[in-house]
Image 1: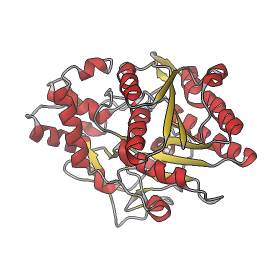
Image 2: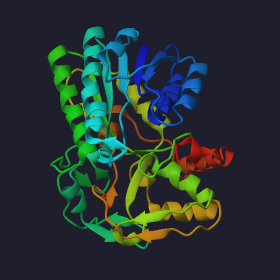
Image 3: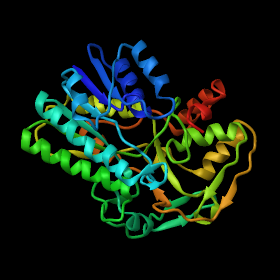
Length: 355
């Protein structure tokens, strides 16, 4: 099987590429990346050593696809993954749409020309912010918890958020680009008869992730805590009780591997995939883990509310378990330990991340 990965030198693209090579014999992987993010060159060198064919290019440019080899499947991992993208001076709203949405047309035209299937890595941030903020939550000492005795809206359960949860606006500019990508990908698949899988991923985290407060929060938090850098709990009373689930990319790769082996026609195409309830944690709980793993480090409270922030979101993996027999193998504790060991072995990691 021949696989093409867009954004191959980003964290998700590079980690998935390596995990797939370890999981399956007889595959070849090519990847394209514009090497825009700080640290991408590190991943490029490592991937080449693993036998990945690298092509430097920009998927926003149709002409850059002319040099790409034919593939059986495309994994689209190229995107600006920050929910605040488009609001900051460093990355305009026009750039956000060019990177995340306009470029997808070139990917889909490639799939159409080569009869290649597509796995689109989407996000939990396609869900309605007002609906997420309206979830019935209980305030625990160090985390928010979904109230199991309350009436839950469609798509929400004790296991988390599923595909049927509301995607009504506002969902952020970033979320809007990803939701639009889903719709366009499904229309191309229907019109030109090639398979598409869409995975709405929770927070991806693991060793080697370039950590910033907006992208790669787990890597950033652990590296900053270890080096006693200032940390802040932003919003939500400055307590750090907001909760996310974390997913190791090698577990995501296991799901993609199963999906790319499928020859199923029709049926469900969109799935939620994350660490689930078992691998969910708040920032306060992450801090407590870091305090125990390294040494205590105080975190300041910042009561400023930011656009698009939400108190709780965890992905419900029920459909992935039912249809693909998939669930994450890496526990949250093991994932954090891997990141911590990487942080200890790479004392300049925040600088390599562009901070």
